[in-house]
Amino acid sequence: MSSVKAELLTSPAAVKFKDSMGGQYDEGYVKISPPGHVQPAGFMDDLPKILDFQVRPDDVWVVTFPKCGTTWSQELVWLLMNDLDFDQAKKVPLIDRFPFLEASTIIPQAVKKPPHSLDVVGGMKSPRLIKCHLPVELLPKQIWSVKPKIIYVARNAKDVIVSYYYHHRLWNECTLTLDEFAECFMENVVSYLPFWDHILAFWRLRNEPNILFYSYEDMKTDLAAVVRKVADFLERPVPAEKLPQLLDHLSFQKMRDNRAVNFEGLVDDQRVGVGLRPTSSDQTFMRSGKVGDGREKLSPEIQQRVDAWTRACLEGSGYDGPR
Ligand code: PPS
Image 1 (cartoon, protein in one colour):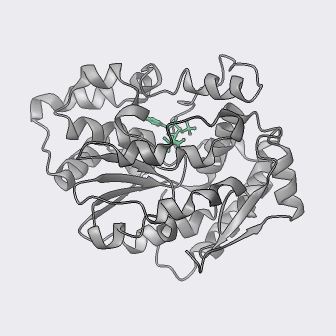
Image 2 (cartoon, rainbow, N blue to C red; image 1 turned 180 degrees about the vertical axis):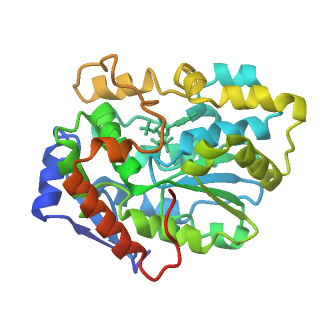
Protein backbone atom coordinates (compact mmCIF):
# COMPACT_ATOMS: atom_id res chain seq x y z
CA MET A 1 0.00 0.00 0.00
CA SER A 2 2.88 2.37 0.76
CA SER A 3 3.87 2.22 -2.93
CA VAL A 4 0.37 3.19 -4.16
CA LYS A 5 -0.03 6.91 -4.90
CA ALA A 6 -3.18 8.92 -5.63
CA GLU A 7 -2.98 12.06 -7.74
CA LEU A 8 -5.99 14.39 -8.06
CA LEU A 9 -7.08 14.73 -11.70
CA THR A 10 -7.10 18.38 -12.72
CA SER A 11 -7.00 18.31 -16.54
CA PRO A 12 -9.76 20.23 -18.39
CA ALA A 13 -11.43 16.89 -19.30
CA ALA A 14 -11.33 15.76 -15.66
CA VAL A 15 -12.86 18.99 -14.41
CA LYS A 16 -15.51 18.89 -17.14
CA PHE A 17 -16.45 15.34 -16.21
CA LYS A 18 -16.57 16.07 -12.46
CA ASP A 19 -18.70 19.17 -13.07
CA SER A 20 -21.12 17.14 -15.20
CA MET A 21 -21.94 14.94 -12.21
CA GLY A 22 -24.12 17.51 -10.43
CA GLY A 23 -21.94 17.91 -7.33
CA GLN A 24 -22.07 14.21 -6.46
CA TYR A 25 -18.29 13.83 -6.65
CA ASP A 26 -17.16 17.33 -5.77
CA GLU A 27 -14.05 15.99 -4.04
CA GLY A 28 -12.88 15.05 -7.56
CA TYR A 29 -11.37 11.95 -9.08
CA VAL A 30 -7.91 10.52 -8.50
CA LYS A 31 -5.51 8.49 -10.59
CA ILE A 32 -4.17 5.64 -8.46
CA SER A 33 -0.69 4.49 -9.51
CA PRO A 34 0.22 1.81 -10.17
CA PRO A 35 -1.70 1.09 -12.41
CA GLY A 36 -3.07 4.59 -13.22
CA HIS A 37 -6.62 3.60 -12.27
CA VAL A 38 -9.34 6.27 -11.79
CA GLN A 39 -11.77 6.47 -8.88
CA PRO A 40 -13.59 9.16 -6.88
CA ALA A 41 -11.14 10.56 -4.31
CA GLY A 42 -13.11 9.00 -1.41
CA PHE A 43 -12.23 5.52 -2.69
CA MET A 44 -8.74 5.94 -1.24
CA ASP A 45 -10.15 5.71 2.33
CA ASP A 46 -11.10 2.08 1.69
CA LEU A 47 -8.30 0.92 -0.61
CA PRO A 48 -6.15 -0.52 2.24
CA LYS A 49 -9.14 -2.63 3.37
CA ILE A 50 -9.72 -3.82 -0.19
CA LEU A 51 -6.10 -4.83 -0.69
CA ASP A 52 -6.07 -6.71 2.63
CA PHE A 53 -9.51 -8.29 2.13
CA GLN A 54 -9.55 -12.00 3.09
CA VAL A 55 -10.12 -14.22 0.05
CA ARG A 56 -11.47 -17.79 0.34
CA PRO A 57 -10.58 -20.67 -2.00
CA ASP A 58 -14.24 -21.48 -2.72
CA ASP A 59 -15.21 -17.88 -3.59
CA VAL A 60 -16.44 -17.28 -7.12
CA TRP A 61 -15.61 -13.81 -8.45
CA VAL A 62 -17.13 -12.08 -11.46
CA VAL A 63 -14.67 -9.34 -12.41
CA THR A 64 -15.28 -6.91 -15.27
CA PHE A 65 -14.83 -3.39 -16.48
CA PRO A 66 -18.32 -1.83 -15.90
CA LYS A 67 -21.00 -2.49 -18.54
CA CYS A 68 -19.34 -5.58 -20.04
CA GLY A 69 -21.97 -8.16 -19.06
CA THR A 70 -21.46 -8.34 -15.29
CA THR A 71 -25.12 -8.64 -14.26
CA TRP A 72 -25.86 -11.17 -17.00
CA SER A 73 -22.92 -13.34 -15.93
CA GLN A 74 -23.73 -12.95 -12.22
CA GLU A 75 -27.26 -14.23 -12.79
CA LEU A 76 -25.90 -17.23 -14.71
CA VAL A 77 -23.28 -18.00 -12.05
CA TRP A 78 -25.77 -17.63 -9.19
CA LEU A 79 -28.20 -20.05 -10.85
CA LEU A 80 -25.48 -22.61 -11.55
CA MET A 81 -24.26 -22.39 -7.96
CA ASN A 82 -27.79 -22.65 -6.54
CA ASP A 83 -29.28 -25.67 -8.32
CA LEU A 84 -31.12 -23.46 -10.83
CA ASP A 85 -33.41 -22.05 -8.16
CA PHE A 86 -35.41 -19.80 -10.50
CA ASP A 87 -37.94 -18.88 -7.80
CA GLN A 88 -35.31 -17.42 -5.48
CA ALA A 89 -33.63 -15.72 -8.44
CA LYS A 90 -36.87 -13.87 -9.15
CA LYS A 91 -37.52 -13.00 -5.49
CA VAL A 92 -34.21 -11.98 -3.94
CA PRO A 93 -32.36 -8.96 -5.38
CA LEU A 94 -29.12 -9.93 -7.12
CA ILE A 95 -27.21 -7.36 -5.05
CA ASP A 96 -28.10 -9.43 -1.94
CA ARG A 97 -27.39 -12.80 -3.55
CA PHE A 98 -24.20 -11.67 -5.25
CA PRO A 99 -22.89 -8.47 -3.64
CA PHE A 100 -20.65 -5.85 -5.21
CA LEU A 101 -17.39 -5.75 -3.23
CA GLU A 102 -16.49 -2.06 -3.57
CA ALA A 103 -20.05 -0.66 -3.84
CA SER A 104 -19.80 1.44 -0.67
CA THR A 105 -16.47 2.90 -1.76
CA ILE A 106 -17.77 4.49 -4.96
CA ILE A 107 -21.35 5.63 -4.38
CA PRO A 108 -21.92 9.35 -3.74
CA GLN A 109 -21.28 10.49 -0.16
CA ALA A 110 -24.92 11.60 0.16
CA VAL A 111 -26.28 8.04 -0.13
CA LYS A 112 -23.61 6.14 1.85
CA LYS A 113 -25.11 4.21 4.71
CA PRO A 114 -24.12 1.11 6.66
CA PRO A 115 -23.46 -1.76 6.31
CA HIS A 116 -20.30 -1.28 4.28
CA SER A 117 -20.16 -3.60 1.25
CA LEU A 118 -16.72 -4.90 2.32
CA ASP A 119 -18.24 -6.01 5.64
CA VAL A 120 -21.24 -7.56 3.88
CA VAL A 121 -19.00 -9.69 1.65
CA GLY A 122 -16.62 -10.43 4.55
CA GLY A 123 -19.53 -11.78 6.61
CA MET A 124 -21.07 -14.01 3.94
CA LYS A 125 -21.29 -17.78 4.23
CA SER A 126 -19.19 -19.80 1.78
CA PRO A 127 -19.22 -20.26 -1.10
CA ARG A 128 -19.38 -16.51 -1.63
CA LEU A 129 -20.27 -15.03 -5.02
CA ILE A 130 -18.57 -11.65 -5.44
CA LYS A 131 -18.95 -8.93 -8.08
CA CYS A 132 -15.97 -6.61 -8.54
CA HIS A 133 -14.90 -4.07 -11.18
CA LEU A 134 -11.38 -3.42 -9.89
CA PRO A 135 -8.33 -3.94 -12.11
CA VAL A 136 -5.79 -6.72 -11.51
CA GLU A 137 -3.47 -4.44 -9.53
CA LEU A 138 -6.11 -3.31 -7.00
CA LEU A 139 -7.82 -6.64 -6.31
CA PRO A 140 -7.29 -8.09 -2.81
CA LYS A 141 -3.66 -9.26 -2.67
CA GLN A 142 -4.70 -12.72 -1.45
CA ILE A 143 -6.51 -13.40 -4.71
CA TRP A 144 -3.17 -14.31 -6.33
CA SER A 145 -2.16 -16.85 -3.64
CA VAL A 146 -5.58 -18.27 -2.67
CA LYS A 147 -6.65 -18.48 -6.36
CA PRO A 148 -10.46 -18.63 -6.17
CA LYS A 149 -12.38 -19.08 -9.43
CA ILE A 150 -12.56 -15.81 -11.35
CA ILE A 151 -14.80 -15.16 -14.35
CA TYR A 152 -13.77 -12.15 -16.42
CA VAL A 153 -16.09 -10.68 -19.08
CA ALA A 154 -14.93 -8.24 -21.78
CA ARG A 155 -16.94 -6.15 -24.30
CA ASN A 156 -16.12 -3.98 -27.31
CA ALA A 157 -15.14 -0.39 -26.50
CA LYS A 158 -17.78 1.48 -28.51
CA ASP A 159 -20.70 -0.37 -26.93
CA VAL A 160 -19.16 0.02 -23.47
CA ILE A 161 -18.80 3.77 -23.99
CA VAL A 162 -22.48 4.09 -24.92
CA SER A 163 -23.64 1.79 -22.13
CA TYR A 164 -21.42 3.55 -19.54
CA TYR A 165 -22.68 6.95 -20.72
CA TYR A 166 -26.30 5.93 -20.16
CA HIS A 167 -25.26 4.38 -16.84
CA HIS A 168 -24.00 7.81 -15.71
CA ARG A 169 -27.21 9.42 -16.93
CA LEU A 170 -29.32 6.82 -15.15
CA TRP A 171 -27.59 6.86 -11.75
CA ASN A 172 -26.13 10.38 -11.69
CA GLU A 173 -27.91 12.44 -14.39
CA CYS A 174 -24.55 13.19 -16.04
CA THR A 175 -25.02 16.27 -18.26
CA LEU A 176 -22.37 15.56 -20.93
CA THR A 177 -23.31 14.66 -24.49
CA LEU A 178 -22.46 11.12 -25.58
CA ASP A 179 -19.52 12.30 -27.70
CA GLU A 180 -18.18 14.44 -24.83
CA PHE A 181 -18.41 11.41 -22.56
CA ALA A 182 -16.52 9.33 -25.17
CA GLU A 183 -13.72 11.90 -25.10
CA CYS A 184 -13.57 11.77 -21.29
CA PHE A 185 -13.49 7.96 -21.56
CA MET A 186 -10.52 7.96 -23.92
CA GLU A 187 -8.78 10.57 -21.73
CA ASN A 188 -9.11 8.28 -18.67
CA VAL A 189 -10.96 10.68 -16.37
CA VAL A 190 -13.98 8.46 -15.54
CA SER A 191 -14.12 5.80 -12.79
CA TYR A 192 -12.48 2.43 -13.53
CA LEU A 193 -10.52 3.63 -16.55
CA PRO A 194 -8.21 2.91 -18.32
CA PHE A 195 -10.41 0.47 -20.24
CA TRP A 196 -8.03 -1.56 -22.39
CA ASP A 197 -5.45 -2.01 -19.61
CA HIS A 198 -8.25 -3.52 -17.49
CA ILE A 199 -9.18 -6.04 -20.18
CA LEU A 200 -5.65 -6.81 -21.38
CA ALA A 201 -4.43 -7.65 -17.89
CA PHE A 202 -7.07 -10.39 -17.61
CA TRP A 203 -6.69 -11.48 -21.23
CA ARG A 204 -3.03 -12.21 -20.42
CA LEU A 205 -4.21 -14.38 -17.49
CA ARG A 206 -6.90 -16.18 -19.54
CA ASN A 207 -5.12 -19.55 -19.50
CA GLU A 208 -4.71 -19.69 -15.71
CA PRO A 209 -6.73 -22.69 -14.45
CA ASN A 210 -8.73 -20.53 -12.00
CA ILE A 211 -9.63 -17.90 -14.60
CA LEU A 212 -12.33 -18.02 -17.28
CA PHE A 213 -12.29 -15.21 -19.86
CA TYR A 214 -15.12 -14.58 -22.36
CA SER A 215 -16.98 -11.64 -23.86
CA TYR A 216 -20.44 -10.08 -23.94
CA GLU A 217 -20.28 -10.70 -27.68
CA ASP A 218 -19.73 -14.45 -27.01
CA MET A 219 -22.88 -14.42 -24.87
CA LYS A 220 -24.87 -12.68 -27.59
CA THR A 221 -23.58 -15.03 -30.31
CA ASP A 222 -24.16 -18.33 -28.51
CA LEU A 223 -25.44 -18.08 -24.95
CA ALA A 224 -25.81 -21.86 -24.66
CA ALA A 225 -22.10 -22.31 -25.44
CA VAL A 226 -21.13 -19.77 -22.76
CA VAL A 227 -23.49 -21.48 -20.28
CA ARG A 228 -21.73 -24.80 -20.95
CA LYS A 229 -18.31 -23.19 -20.57
CA VAL A 230 -19.22 -21.54 -17.26
CA ALA A 231 -20.94 -24.71 -16.01
CA ASP A 232 -17.80 -26.77 -16.79
CA PHE A 233 -15.58 -24.18 -15.12
CA LEU A 234 -17.73 -24.18 -11.97
CA GLU A 235 -18.23 -27.96 -12.13
CA ARG A 236 -22.00 -27.44 -11.99
CA PRO A 237 -23.39 -29.23 -15.04
CA VAL A 238 -26.82 -28.18 -16.36
CA PRO A 239 -29.25 -31.07 -16.94
CA ALA A 240 -30.19 -30.98 -20.66
CA GLU A 241 -33.90 -30.69 -19.87
CA LYS A 242 -33.27 -27.53 -17.79
CA LEU A 243 -31.21 -25.67 -20.39
CA PRO A 244 -34.18 -24.08 -22.25
CA GLN A 245 -35.57 -22.64 -18.98
CA LEU A 246 -32.14 -21.28 -18.06
CA LEU A 247 -31.67 -19.63 -21.47
CA ASP A 248 -35.16 -18.15 -21.25
CA HIS A 249 -34.50 -16.77 -17.75
CA LEU A 250 -31.26 -15.18 -19.02
CA SER A 251 -32.84 -13.61 -22.12
CA PHE A 252 -32.71 -9.83 -22.33
CA GLN A 253 -36.51 -9.53 -22.23
CA LYS A 254 -36.83 -11.70 -19.11
CA MET A 255 -33.96 -9.99 -17.30
CA ARG A 256 -35.29 -6.56 -18.24
CA ASP A 257 -38.64 -7.43 -16.64
CA ASN A 258 -37.16 -9.15 -13.57
CA ARG A 259 -37.11 -6.66 -10.68
CA ALA A 260 -34.57 -8.80 -8.83
CA VAL A 261 -31.92 -8.08 -11.47
CA ASN A 262 -32.96 -4.88 -13.27
CA PHE A 263 -32.00 -2.46 -10.44
CA GLU A 264 -35.48 -0.89 -10.38
CA GLY A 265 -35.91 0.70 -6.99
CA LEU A 266 -32.18 0.88 -6.23
CA VAL A 267 -31.65 3.44 -8.99
CA ASP A 268 -34.42 5.66 -7.69
CA ASP A 269 -33.18 5.31 -4.10
CA GLN A 270 -29.79 6.64 -5.19
CA ARG A 271 -31.26 9.36 -7.43
CA VAL A 272 -33.60 10.66 -4.75
CA GLY A 273 -30.76 10.39 -2.19
CA VAL A 274 -28.64 12.82 -4.20
CA GLY A 275 -31.55 15.17 -4.90
CA LEU A 276 -32.49 14.03 -8.42
CA ARG A 277 -35.99 13.28 -9.68
CA PRO A 278 -36.87 9.57 -9.98
CA THR A 279 -36.17 7.90 -13.35
CA SER A 280 -38.35 8.48 -16.37
CA SER A 281 -39.76 5.46 -18.21
CA ASP A 282 -37.08 5.51 -20.92
CA GLN A 283 -34.26 5.24 -18.33
CA THR A 284 -33.57 1.62 -17.44
CA PHE A 285 -30.53 -0.40 -16.41
CA MET A 286 -31.46 -3.11 -18.96
CA ARG A 287 -31.29 -0.61 -21.76
CA SER A 288 -30.54 -1.95 -25.24
CA GLY A 289 -28.89 -5.33 -24.74
CA LYS A 290 -27.28 -5.59 -28.14
CA VAL A 291 -23.98 -5.55 -30.00
CA GLY A 292 -23.42 -2.53 -32.24
CA ASP A 293 -25.06 0.32 -30.29
CA GLY A 294 -21.78 2.26 -30.43
CA ARG A 295 -21.81 2.16 -34.23
CA GLU A 296 -25.36 3.53 -34.21
CA LYS A 297 -25.05 6.18 -31.54
CA LEU A 298 -21.52 7.64 -31.59
CA SER A 299 -20.75 10.26 -34.25
CA PRO A 300 -18.61 9.06 -37.20
CA GLU A 301 -15.77 11.31 -36.05
CA ILE A 302 -15.74 9.88 -32.52
CA GLN A 303 -15.98 6.35 -33.92
CA GLN A 304 -12.85 6.93 -35.96
CA ARG A 305 -11.10 8.23 -32.88
CA VAL A 306 -12.22 5.25 -30.80
CA ASP A 307 -10.94 2.90 -33.53
CA ALA A 308 -7.54 4.62 -33.69
CA TRP A 309 -7.30 4.74 -29.87
CA THR A 310 -8.23 1.04 -29.66
CA ARG A 311 -5.58 0.11 -32.24
CA ALA A 312 -2.96 2.09 -30.29
CA CYS A 313 -3.97 0.55 -26.94
CA LEU A 314 -3.94 -3.02 -28.32
CA GLU A 315 -0.86 -2.72 -30.50
CA GLY A 316 1.64 -5.49 -29.84
CA SER A 317 -0.66 -7.24 -27.36
CA GLY A 318 -1.72 -10.08 -29.67
CA TYR A 319 -5.38 -9.39 -28.79
CA ASP A 320 -7.83 -7.80 -31.23
CA GLY A 321 -10.51 -7.16 -28.63
CA PRO A 322 -14.04 -8.55 -28.47
CA ARG A 323 -16.20 -8.00 -31.53
S1 PPS B 1 -22.65 -2.90 -14.46
O1 PPS B 1 -23.37 -1.66 -14.08
O2 PPS B 1 -21.24 -2.63 -14.71
O3 PPS B 1 -22.83 -3.99 -13.52
O4 PPS B 1 -23.30 -3.29 -15.86
P1 PPS B 1 -23.20 -4.69 -16.60
O5 PPS B 1 -24.14 -5.64 -16.00
O6 PPS B 1 -21.78 -5.10 -16.74
O7 PPS B 1 -23.67 -4.31 -18.06
C1 PPS B 1 -24.95 -3.81 -18.34
C2 PPS B 1 -25.17 -4.05 -19.81
O8 PPS B 1 -25.49 -5.45 -20.03
C3 PPS B 1 -26.75 -5.53 -20.67
N1 PPS B 1 -27.45 -6.76 -20.27
C4 PPS B 1 -27.85 -7.69 -21.16
N2 PPS B 1 -27.71 -7.76 -22.50
C5 PPS B 1 -28.25 -8.83 -23.12
N3 PPS B 1 -28.93 -9.80 -22.47
C6 PPS B 1 -29.08 -9.78 -21.13
N4 PPS B 1 -29.75 -10.74 -20.50
C7 PPS B 1 -28.51 -8.68 -20.41
N5 PPS B 1 -28.48 -8.33 -19.10
C8 PPS B 1 -27.81 -7.15 -19.05
C9 PPS B 1 -27.47 -4.26 -20.23
O9 PPS B 1 -28.59 -3.99 -21.03
C10 PPS B 1 -26.34 -3.25 -20.38
O10 PPS B 1 -26.00 -3.02 -21.74
P2 PPS B 1 -26.62 -1.84 -22.63
O11 PPS B 1 -25.79 -1.83 -23.88
O12 PPS B 1 -26.52 -0.58 -21.86
O13 PPS B 1 -28.04 -2.24 -22.91
